[in-house]
Length: 376
Image (tube, rainbow, N blue to C red; front, side, top):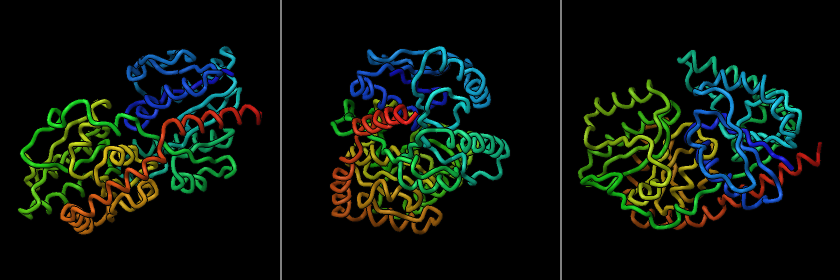
């Protein structure tokens, strides 16, 4: 069977993590199949060594552009699928071609296109309106839809208007390197006079950094809680990044709050393992890779009580209302002051993360792709 993996939308963050992990596992678990990885010229992050049963096709725009990518997929991708005699196409995003000549399996890994959190940004709204309409049509034509959490499945089905029988939940995994001692000391990534609280997530509106910064500022008023706050991730919104920086300056937190930018994936274990507490204050997540990475790294977690986060962590985190700074402060202080609670969270996280394996993710994906072929 020839299976095309459409990587044209892979950029950074969760999509990059997904590809870096899922492709090697597919190579090991599905040696009987031929895979074709499709990506564009600008996607250097996908120029890694592929398994023997993979080939690569590089096409499309030479710069990142969502409109150009969508246009190419609608006009050129169907012909490529025919020429390459593809039996099944797997797309890790639902905004792919409407005109696939073969069965398709799509992953609805991100609900941001259905979000109303950035109503003031007309460009964001226009982009989301287009992708939302395309996603609905592609989803209706797909053989199966993969969701990364029960929350995302339940939230999306009503919006998509598709048969629930086509919807399958497949959790993401986490890399083995997060379970092992880091290959470099955390001090090489962040060296400060105080222990640190950590968030690993892109800088976007729905990540809720301004409220987190304010909550941390209130914690700093307590001299017995001597921590710094470190956040790392791609700067995906210049406007939001400037807003976060303004909040840091307004609250006089220079020297206490540190932005590391996008840390290389291989260095993340050291950053996690050096932290005293992992915090995810986001307003919207469909899975939340950093939560699983933090559990595997053996650090306690505090997270928002919304969307998928309670589902992913279960009893391995303590939760706050991300819209209420007072609640964020109270929960953070509770966990930081209770050594026994932090130990219980670490133990629960190590148990919970056993259910998140890339091997399992890849095996379930292969089963679904094979089922799509049999259904056709």
